[in-house]
Image (cartoon, rainbow, N blue to C red; front, side):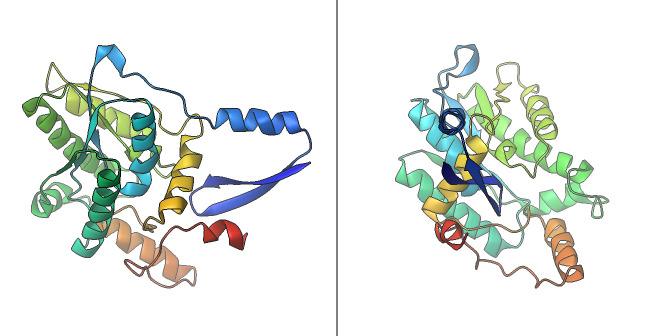
Amino acid sequence: MKTFHLIAIPYRIKTFTILNPSLFILFNMTLERKKLELPQGHNKLLLHSCCAPCSGEVMETLIESEIDFSIFFYNPNIHPVKEYLIRKEENIRFAEKHNIEFIDCDYDTDNWFARAKGMENEPEKGIRCTMCFDMRFERTALYAYEHGFRLISSSLGISRWKDMQQINGCGIRAAAHYPEIEYWDYNWRKNGGAHRMIEISNREEFYQQEYCGCVYSLRDTNRWRMKNGRDRIKLGEKFYSNAMDEEH
């Protein structure tokens, strides 16, 4: 009999007991990384990254697959600037650790707020999020077009808190502005990707974000927390750690 920990979704850990060792082996096999190849004969990738926790598994998979790629960080939605810098600088450190090019794009928050006008009270996964993904992918596709990349993708879809269909739709729409650009809608969650995302975050002790990123997400998350007797989010204080497993 074998007992092991499975992190099913971010921030929650469940313990399972496996009576049949062969099932344990089968489970481990489903979590193994598979070597990837870029679609349609492409030879390099521009990867939009939202943060280190989401891009960590994506980056390590691409590295193990010997795929040439660069990180493109364009996230003017993240508020306030303190939170933005924490997420960006952590992503830079992880990219430097693996000798991956990190492209730091503008933090043009005025543009983001202008496009979000009238959508301040829209729910998560609604039209405001679609606008936000559109804006970030449009800039990613433009940079790709201007700098010789023909394939783009994003780490956003690995999060179980996101609507993958919504994200892929925005990516495909942004790439369609340029005949030479294609959006790679690979499902980064499968083959254990979502599980390894948490493992890597624990190993690297990444900053643990408690809201999506924008000021409206922060507002709504704090409202929910206070309604349920929890303290407001304290920026820059919570980190992933292997201690999470030890506590359970």
